[in-house]
Length: 463
Image (cartoon, rainbow, N blue to C red; front, side, top):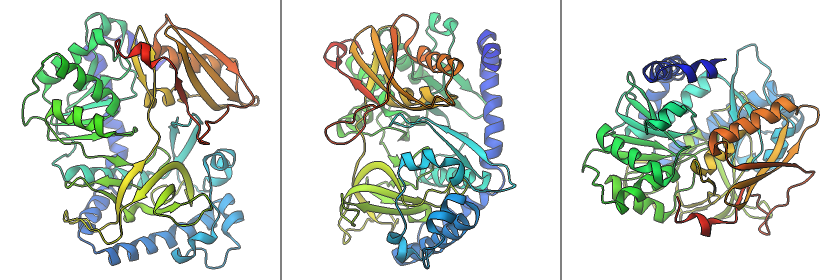
């Protein structure tokens, strides 16, 4: 009903609704304990590594004790482990992967009389997951993010161009070559990431030059397409307008970084977390990545679950007490920097040499353009019963979706919602084939790919 009403409203009223939505959301994010958390993050900036580890151990003990007391799942799995809440004993605790979490989610979520906030996640592995969280945890996560961004001058209200998976446009907007909506109170312009194609990119570039945002936030793959179009067509983005670029949700390659920074004449400062609530990795002004020990515990393990300098990342988060993530195998890999190396930026947290995350992929719609990995994973929003899916593109005008479903939850209405989510991204002209399967094979590497685009050679000159 809300979506139907939004679609028929004129542009200026749609902008008003976007602003109203943000007012309500920001009240939850930036109310309560948010200011207290911001103050704490500011005070903790200068802590020594020894002090950071002591803080981490204290938060770890609180989390484990809380989870054992309030989560049926962790009562069962951790309750009989001696001194489980001592951080030096962390390797005695079992590792939880995404499938463990998904299957046991009701038991993992803590028992509380306090209202928990629902976070609907898609996830780049194609597995649906609903995570519940306390409001104060959400406020602390935003305090972490805002403390990070504030190091480069950002605060809420600064003029920002945002690129995320929000479906905000109507056919009237497309006809008018208007690919954005604006929250005028908070100074945020949301650019559609569903309409990235050659025919439209000039309007993105020209409006961004006119809008002159101080900060860019969101999917780097969309920023890349805009930057490439701008450079190829000799657009000159004004010098000194953009202060910093904060990518989210996707891996930033060296080539992407060079192109985006060249066009927008500003530096990228990367971050790593997850929609489930993983602890943070932040890039500093010197270009170094730091493990933020205040936000959780990071373990890098080899194939035998032994500590390693380079390997898969297993995390324990301090900011998701509603759905505790304890020794959670997040599905990515990182390489740590040599322990003797330090950074002069003032952040004494350990350094990361490289995040070896998943290489982002995309599907292509001749009608809508590129649909990046973040938008593909978000097709799971507001659905249940889809255990896993994979998008395969072997033809320019067709996408095949393989689905593993839970028959007890999945229904024809859920199928229609899933198809609607896809249609919002690929348009109405492409053929969309759904195939229900019992299993989706992984790659030879053992990794699962949510997107398999086998026609990139046909798309390179179109996107």
